Image (cartoon, rainbow, N blue to C red; front, side):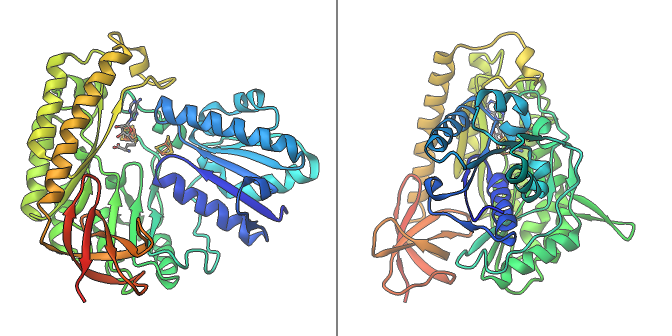
Length: 439
Ligand code: SAH
Ligand code: SF4
Ligand code: F3S
């Protein structure tokens, strides 16, 4: 087995989780993490293909690593993740120094594949999507020093929103056994993790049969809530269609569940929602937001939205802007539509030019910045409970997050990492808060 490895991670939290899984697999096989790619015998790029930009980023990163290999010819290089799944053998052709390509459902074979390459130098493509979820894997102490962690509860997506590549690269939905999720959460807690985020591409549709009874996300949240050393629970990403009353109720009843939800709406136009195949209307989305705010008045709501879906008219775009202004999100991840190979939207007529998409995105982002700033300013003078995660922006600062998932930097002499502290907010900035520790 190689003695050292380095992993570049792009994309969503699921990729971060997968990279941690890979790192633990290699460490269990005797390798150690390297400081950087130049010092590593094995370098892995964990890629994202959700939009054009991250895919290009993955390609240029692979190109850079291949150039390092020119100086270190024995280096083993792997491309994993969603671009790897989508492009498969094409990547081996494009990058002559690349040794293996491996999709997300094959990662449990990573050690075996690397060992085979060491023996035979045979280039490998592993992109089977049929594999079930991975069993829990622990490298004792791997997470020590981390305050928050991820646990995947389901993989894949069955929705096939017309623009989205995720169902093609992550496969169909498979929920993990609740006992595995509990075991993994216990393991994180024993290493010092105090906040856990349950992950899934479509987390609300979690469903696992246990002794002929279904465990749902709501019941899972209650079970995770019983783990003493875990103080905060989050879950992501939610699909509005599957946000049941039962789950909304959890924001009232599961006291460790943080008052924050990421609830992508994508567009405010019912016509475009239909073309996207999202399975809800703008009225339904707004009703769910109301239900959440009724259940938990202090809940922070963030979302994903895209502009420039094929055929999006000025009128459709205006409906999106109306939602942005009406809901007043705490934060928005906004994107320009880009064609993804093999999706239904790729074949639609009415593609918009780049300038129109860019202009729409810019206006949306300007308005959202004002809203985020205004909402953060409104917190000035309030006391927020912050879970301290690490060093802050400046040397004398530490940084943590509020229950509503806002980043707070505050001045503090002693190390409070891993503690819940009360902070009086002094400055509400655009993307974060600044405050003083209440001693
Ligand atoms: N599972 C999550 C989304 C994962 S992808 C969900 O259903 O909400 C993250 C975000 O990328 C999406 O919410 C969407 O806003 C954006 N996205 C996905 N495909 C895209 C495309 N082809 N062009 C632009 N944005 C896209
Ligand atoms: Fe993509 Fe839709 Fe599945 Fe989200 S729900 S991952 S946007 S197909
Ligand atoms: Fe990207 Fe794959 Fe996540 S496409 S967003 S890394 S599921």
